[in-house]
Image 1 (cartoon, rainbow, N blue to C red):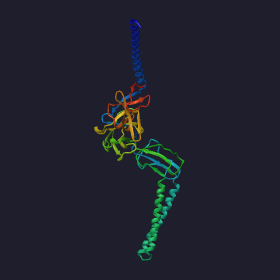
Image 2 (cartoon, rainbow, N blue to C red; image 1 turned 90 degrees about the vertical axis):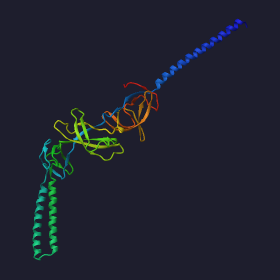
Image 3 (cartoon, rainbow, N blue to C red; image 1 turned 90 degrees about the horizontal axis):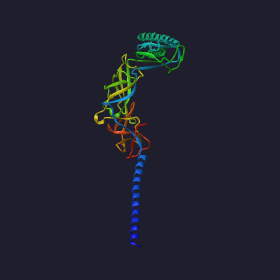
Image 4 (cartoon, helix red, strand yellow; image 1 turned 60 degrees about the vertical axis):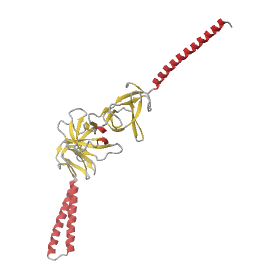
Length: 355
């Protein structure tokens, strides 16, 4: 082989090596781009939302107004409705006669027992007089006294039976929901009508256990009409002493005296009460937050800027448009409210706008 041929062979070899190196570098770049694209394609697409404070040291719950004092009257005897003395919407006073059920048999029974009682009382008086003269024994006196007591008891029962034919208002208020008509026959226990005091209303709410110390009898509560209008100042009149272990809540009732401009019973309201101390302050997460549970553990997915992590929490009640978080989450955090696939601890995610 000549020197010239040898040089040509070396040059060809170098060119081949350079070609292979170039192919390798381009292949590496292509693989990197492909890997990044694949990572983006496989990362879950999530929507996130910020955690908010429960609002100026207050907690809000949805509820309805109801009458503080209401009586449902039912038939205590059987018979025909003889007369209805009121109409729906009529205001009545406690003790006022509302309705009469046929009482002919009961009145006759009272007359009979009144006569028997009068006779027994007369006989007992005569026996007592004879006893003073020594003409009757003590046993005869006792027997006469027992007859008088039986007659009085029978008369008492007859009068009770007669009173059950007269349905009277147990409280002052408005008559409504009259369910019977004249001449209709009713049976014992059948609903007849209701009497409601429209001037005293109340609202009830089930509050999280964290509020048990800050909400007590006498606490001021604010009732805000959902339909709009001025808020109503009420006072908590009842607080359940125990917290339900299953739901972690207790019942509180706030009452107030209604004014002409205030909403009526049945109106939907917001029940606003003071929050707990700052050490145990609660926060709110959207209703759409992804919440998962395993046994007694409940968690949400918290977003830290690139990844998601499980965050154990204790949830409170569901409010109008949010879920109250009692512990485990700080105000200002961001939580996952939507995902296109299941999430895993520490997963890299891509945040997208809600559709």
